[in-house]
Image 1: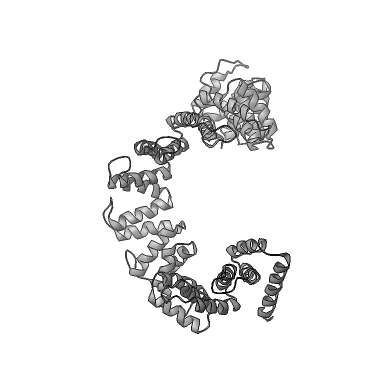
Image 2: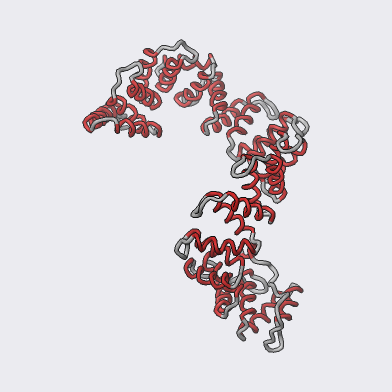
Length: 501
């Protein structure tokens, strides 16, 4: 952790000669540069024991990093604490970090703030950044946005990109300060110029949408490119899409594919799916169904529904992979559960072809219903057959087709009849729809008691939207009506409760 924040070199280059016995800080530096860490530690231990704050600080770092000695955060914190007590600015900052993150000591934001304040007051930019954040969040100190701005601006003026970014966001989002697009733009721009990737992304999005700044695709492209070159997979993917579409620059499919590949190889699921499409269509790359399937599979493994649908289609028709309708159904189902309408419809059609005999027909009815809504006559016929056989989920979905005139002639009375049959058999979809009809008086007499009863039963069956509707209906009813609705729901439940096995 420390190596990401602290320089690996112990900052000994500018250290003055400090004699302790026959060895000096220059000797420790020489040993360190020669990669003789054990000797460097030995010299620093002698100097630190003799009271050198600088040696104590440097020794603490080496112990924390495990260079030349066993890594020991607690012992490191002890030496850094000694240096901080002597007023060593860098040690005060580092002790604050240790206390803030619980490195070698018990986490203590209040004590961390005290140490950071000492270092910040002496001009330590990183300490100014951290104490500014503590004041902004009210951690270890009382929240004080004025103090937060003071310290963050001090760090930002010392060119600390993270402080510049924090200020930009505070002013852009009006987080504890008055919204100020000018200051937001100023600090985000400075952070972006300092190669702060998140600042580059934030500014790029602002220019792309015209949010707080004039819309400027070319400027957005420039910033996304900077973030992409800085290693952001998201920026690489967005840049690839912009270059592909000719947004902000001339259209360049090959360059788009290169950026998309970088993001895809970094694990960005959307980029993997996009690259799959590019191989499938031969956009910016040679057309290659095998590569398309490979990238769709990687995106699918990350759980991206649109990639799962595309991969399922490849399996269904045998494109780039061996034809396998069972594998297709598996991927369609994953995407369908995630809400992909295209996958729901195709899964429904696939289940119809296989008659859904081996699976759960109640679940199959859900997906086949989606296919029927999309105009699949075979799906309508399947629902009719399953409804005739008494499958409640099929009865409820067939009712919905009659209610909406999808695949069948609209018939409100028949829809209500089927909804009642399915609802009474425990189909939550039908219970919800029937409840809504009673609440609106559609095809039935308006009756909030019946409406509440049916949506309450649907909610008990796991329908989250039904629970919301029940609560809305209850506000429109008297206490007596609500009590009556609950009584009817209890009676239905007792009547339809499965007998003990």
